[in-house]
Image 1 (spheres, rainbow, N blue to C red):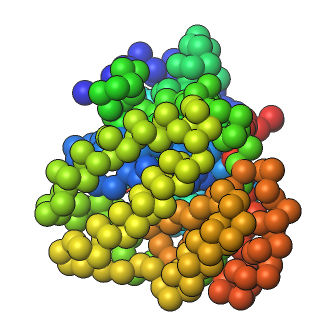
Image 2: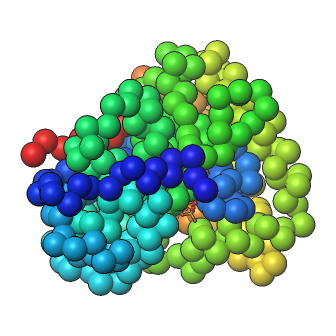
Length: 364
Ligand code: DP6
């Protein structure tokens, strides 16, 4: 039983329902990493992220009432204009789990179109942006058909809950600037079920932050995040990791509030290494960093030492490096990337991203 189960959301068979909805939703970079889950997509530890802007997915759903509700999910899925039956199967499975929350889903024939702003082969994970744009679109269908009267806060909270069921990190993408997901004692409103915004707790130092994504490899990862999460449930450092993430979250939130770059950098960089350290010490153990991941990290450390510019690295579950820095230093950092980092990037590629204003609904 989910908090959002609602048997009333069935379309009156006398109605003729059809329409189109859509959302453009960004990816996010975790500062405190979600790593490990239990139950139905609930996190072992709380996480916090910056919402991005340039790496996004745009999803539209055309819906049309079927002649008869046969209890089945009926959808076609197009990715970048091409019909993708393999992706459709994954979405079908996801939607099946949403039948109690959106009972109308089996009454509709759905045509879903999804496009990413970043190249498919860039090695950038897209589940946060794709699942959040899909979840938001489903919430919009509900609102359009049933004129559901909920506040903006409630709408995004529900979208975050739905996105989480598709991909954990996606639940943080529905808010501007920054989001926190996972229950932690010191933040009473925090929840394992949906993310909450942290925008109002950001010091001016953290209101305009860049995240340039240095592409070290474009290959598919040798191990998916889902496999990595699964391995965490029996990891020998599991309990310590949960304690550490809870403590760090509190210190990081204080640093974000007070504008403390040093604490921010110390925690964020250590989180990146902790994530990869957990992979390297799991059973089976695996390594996702590559030689150029470390080359870039070493360059960033030297640059920071020499210039005193607060530029820090982060990693997600892959070899690409995220370079985080405040907008005030963008000219110097840009030069540093061109002079020192591009040579370690696959085909010289990197994506210039920055903290964004959150998802946007598309007009039809
Ligand atoms: C390392 O959200 O991709 O990026 O819930 O199985 O879809 P699923 O996993 P996913 O895991 C993301 C892991 C991470 C850290 C983070 O984003 O917090």
